[in-house]
Amino acid sequence: MENRNLIFSGLRDACNTSFFFKNGDFTEIKPEYLLTVLVAKQFSDLKILDKYIVKLEDSTEDFASACVPNMTLKWETSKRHNSSRKGRIDVAVYNPKMGKNLNYPALFPIELKGINPAKQLVIDDLQRNLEYFLLEDEITGKSHLQISYFACIEEAKKYFHKGDESNFKNFIKKRYESWTINLKALANHHDLDLDIYVDEVMSQLYEKDMEIDKSEGNSINDFIDDWHYYVGVIVEIKTRHDSNFKQEGV
Image 1: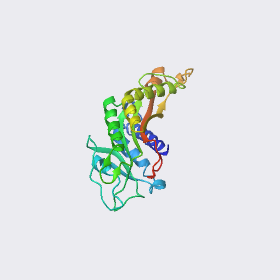
Image 2: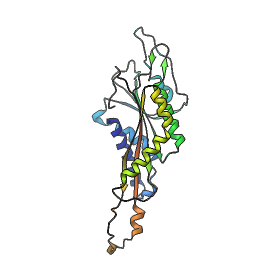
Image 3: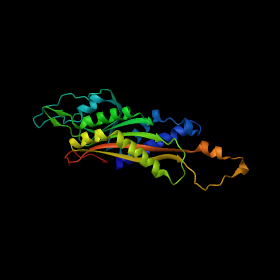
C-alpha cells in the first residue's frame, strides 16, 4: 500500500504543478511530461532514500536482466534478458540493500501514461510488466520480481455534483476491469494477482443546492467553466506466494 500511496501522491503533484504552470487554467492541464519526474520523486524522499535506487527512462534490458538472480552459489552468472517489447521504462526501482558488485536486484517498474490513455497503450504496458514476472535464466533461476505498477489519470467529461464522486470512480474501475479481463486471466494462470485502484487526484465540484453569489458578477457558466474532476488509476500486478526476496513498501 505504501507504494500505491506514493504513486497517487505523484499523480496529485503532477496535476497541481501543471495547474500552476498553466496559470490556474484547469482546461490546459497536461501533466504527461511531469508524471515521470514527480512520481519518481516520491521514492527519492530523504526519509526513504536508503530503500530505493530510482532510475528514469531505464532500459528494459537492464531491468529485465535484474529481475533474475545475478549469480549462483557456484559464482555462475546470469545472461542478459529483455522484454519482447524493448524500450524504456518510465520509472525503474531497484533494491540497494541486496546488490552485489553494483548489480542491484529489480524491485518494481512503474509505467505511466497521461490523461485518458487509449486502451491499447494501457494493455501494451501491462503486458510488458507481466512479462518480467515470467523471466527465467537457465543458470541462475526464475524472476524474483514480486510487484509492478501502471498508473495514469482519467478526467471526467460529464458534469456531476459533489457527493457523486464514487459513481465516476466505479465507472473508471469497471472500464479498466473490462480492458484487463484477458490479462487478469493470464496473470491468474501464473499465480499472479492483477488489481485496479482508483482515487481522486484533483477536483472542483459543487453542491446540488449551491447558491450563486451574483453580487460579484458570477454566473452559473463561471462555475461550470471551473468544474473539473480527475482520478488516478493504478494497475498493480503482484505475486501470491511468499518469497525470501523481501521487497519494500508492497
